Image (cartoon, rainbow, N blue to C red; front, side):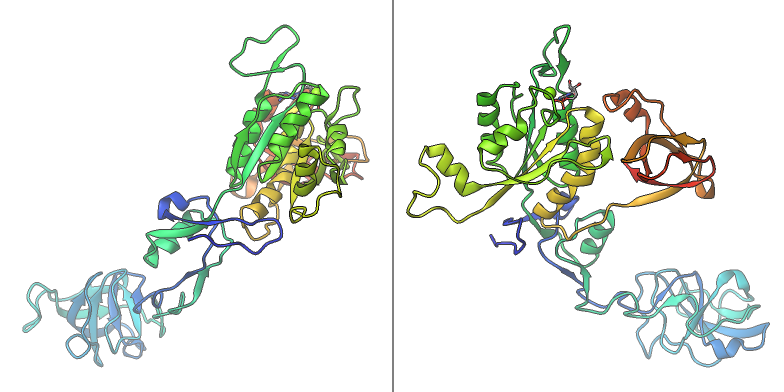
Amino acid sequence: MVEQHATSVCPGEVETVDLLAGLGRVLAEGILADRDFPPFARATRDGYAVRAADLALVPARLEVVDEVKAGDWPEPGVCSVGRGQAVGIMTGAPLAAGADAVVMVEHTSLLADQFPGSPAGKPAGKLEVRRSVGVGENFVPRGAEARAGQLLLDRGRRLDHAGIAIAASVGKSQVQVFRKPRVAVLSTGDEVVAIDATPGPAQIRNSNSYSLAAQVQNAGGEAVRLAIAPDERGRLRTLIEEGLGCDLLLLTGGVSMGKYDLVEQVLGELKAEFYFTGAEIQPGRPVVFGSCDAGVLARVDSGVPVGTRARAPAPHKKYFFGLPGNPVSTMVTFELFARPMIEALAGMAPQRLIFLSARLKSEIRTKTGLKRFLPAVLSGEFENAEVELARWQGSGDIAALARANCYVVIPPDRERIEAGEWVSLLMR
Ligand code: AMP
Ligand code: MG
């Protein structure tokens, strides 16, 4: 089935996939409870189904009349708990009619094993109970978690293991998900060479295409790695046009102030609209975001001047990010800016970035003016989590980033943060 998704950025088609193949994909359908959850009053302890009123005074003696294990169905009329009676029950088993609580086996002693007339093989006899229970204790009433027909997972939700558990529990062996957005990754720079090439003395391998492709996949997109663009207008433009054929284009490098930083100029030639051309952050200050009109692209392509076509294609924006080339800047700006766009294109409901807090292990001194995202190591457990900056040589230092597991976020007005202060963390 193919269906249009009604958001402004995502005309994503729908596909049906096996449940596990849906991990990390975005639901194109809501998942409903196919019956009450739990479908019966479910014991949460091993013990005895009882009437709480019978245990108002303890110790008390009850008569064990039956046993229900997980998977058994206590047919009303055949298996029930009358006054002064108890029915053995196991975790996950249904509560027999008449019972209103479960007393844990730890608080009981079975005084005789076999009670005359008990069903074959089932323990029965006199039970001594040493603790009272309240009505409703140690079982979950039918439908308390969800009612039949209730929405359990929204359309637009990305499936994680918990979502997979829900879909499985309502019998969805297949799910409808949105097609992944295709995200072009275009690295630029005369010094950048393919990773399987032997770099010359002043060349570096194209790690950004790979880190970005990994981040794209992680965010729910399908990465399309393009050839490396040199710092030369014509070839750069050809590759940008190719990239704009995808749902989103991510460029790296060539967006700073250098003489050979040509990305913005070439995008300008393509009549790009820029929404921003810099952010007050470090690393990542020169990041740019904008769009090209797909109609304009087609006309520029065919050499027919803008405005002379009788029937121009319906305006349709193609978005791009120009991310800085320094590898850590590329990674940070991806998380802050590109990830939300990919999620939107993937059909996901808008998400907020998640920031954790931890105590700073040692003082940080920095300059004011920019919000900083500094690679750091979060360690310690439970309530003792603490964080320390990774030693690094600036935004080109991927070795430091690989040793780090988060970024400490420093507000632009702070010059000094004392050891022991709580700081905000962006996980990576
Ligand atoms: P640029 O943003 O083009 O000025 O590049 C900034 C720094 O990032 C330079 O040191 C580049 O060599 C480096 N760089 C640019 N592109 C890449 C890439 N694709 N992979 C790794 N490093 C890169
Ligand atoms: Mg460059």
